[in-house]
Length: 235
Image (tube, rainbow, N blue to C red; front, side, top):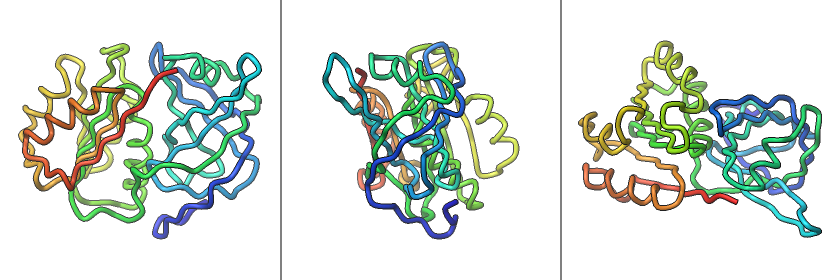
């Protein structure tokens, strides 16, 4: 288990993971818990792994962000949306089945406790790397405000991990959760009236939505050098 006060990443390497559980979070999104074959993976909150696939005699990889805290290793959790053939392969893995993967990868990470409040904005399975960071901050006893605005275009009224976020808001005073079910995330951000110039803003959404949410955050006062965004693609 990785120490909470010292975070480091291990060199990128190959692992074999075994499926421990597969739980539907929404009609299209699953949380898949994996156990690695050895306790050597050290990743930073927000990093990813590359599962390896074969199809029609060809080998493929696709990146998936780790949704769990580094402290959970050698177990990791993937939050996978069924939006393409590779995601269907991962979602359909049976308990006990093996999955080769390589990691860690990714630069949108935390390696130390931030010095500013945090605003996270997620759509769909883009919640995965943000959950890893939020869980780690909670474990560290982070006291500055942490806001999460969450939407899910695939099934707008069903958000991955929503019961968890609602419970976390009750038990961690720094954490504030807003869902974007009745309105779009942009409207939620406007209504929050946060002074975004004081925040680190982190966005993860599919395709152009990441850019659109970034434009909204900047228009509401976020500083470009305190804003990070990541987009994911489906296949």
